[in-house]
Image (tube, rainbow, N blue to C red; front, side, top):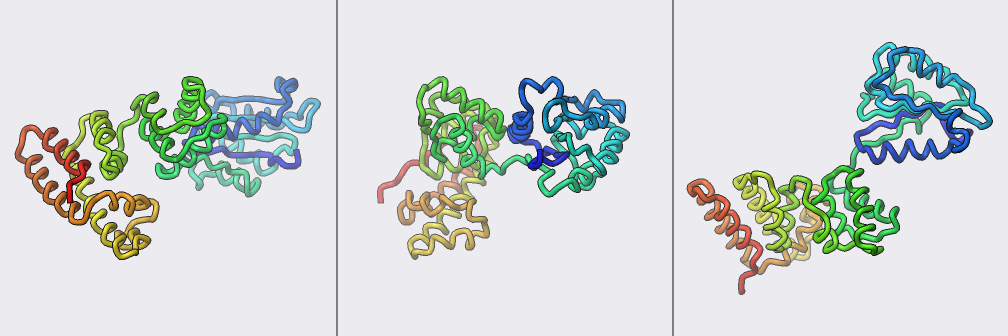
Length: 319
């Protein structure tokens, strides 16, 4: 029991992180004694202010500690929450109270009361930013005995979305489906349906790769694509690539982020993408962008005009 605090707050919208944190605590309770030393309470159903406190004050049976898990702790009525605040001022040292919540503001009395228990009492389960998800998916894959490069993981995120639970379940499915230890991008493309809304930025990445087939598949998977907005995204990328190409020619590609006023992760592929275009080719594509913009504003067939623009970017020109 020495390594555990008397209370934890597992808080954040990442469901997989929350469930993993709770699972680690549950694993410390002997399975054959769980009936006596593990109490799971749904916060939605609690009305009596003493219900949780009474459970937490009970002594463990034939083991070092008792575990009380309260799900949806952010939905507890105020009298119940206040009773917990009072309890946490002097908690039972032989019980671990685990409060689980999607959202609980740091300025609430309950959050502050748990935080005072110890520096590690708050277990942050905030979701990862989109750009941090592929490396995280690679680690999830390793947990299933799989290897996966970041490129394949990025494609999985594009298709499944940002739910870590959904991503983890899809990895399990791929392992069972394919019976292989290494998952490639081709495996993801062939076996994972596009269920998440396609991100305009992921679409732009495919266009910058000059991968016409993939870009058109992504465009086709979009629900009611806003061609004017997508055009503006691609136009912005072309301008950025002109800058990246110019710096790369001078051997200063490391300055792309600074020159564009972006974070490094936002432009990590710009120099590589820029090398896919010949000298002067990007400037020609700016003229194609102007042609497309006029067509989008004055033509009833915006889709055809936009697809032509995408193909113009993806198709290398002789130079």
